[in-house]
Image 1 (cartoon, rainbow, N blue to C red):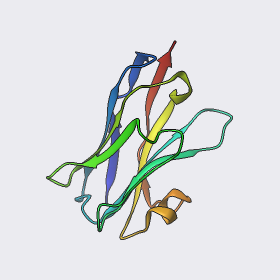
Image 2 (image 1 turned 60 degrees about the vertical axis):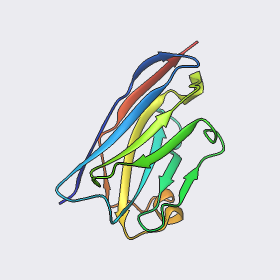
Image 3 (image 1 turned 120 degrees about the horizontal axis):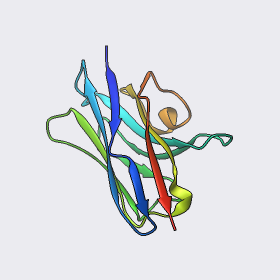
Image 4 (image 1 turned 60 degrees about the horizontal axis):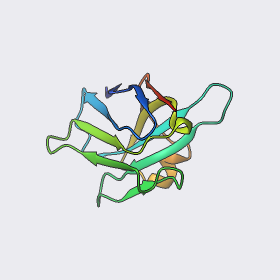
Length: 125
């Protein structure tokens, strides 16, 4: 049974950087398409980024493109989200989630079989 644990959140000033980690246990992430999504209470969940299991395809929401980078580690256990030039509107609880052998479009649409408990990111002016 795959388990995902997010870490790396925190409080930073506008313009700062954070690197979030999505660490897997119970299985390698090599076969999983993994997304990062974020949620603010009272708002809809927003899919931020995705990395495909197969060809390394990546997707970024327009709101983060050019500032965030998703990547996998070589060991297949962790997916990262490097977040640069952070803005107050990036403040949210960030989650990772995934599905085996799936397309990013499907996982971003809510087709996740596994997800973590989230890590809070707060960006102040």
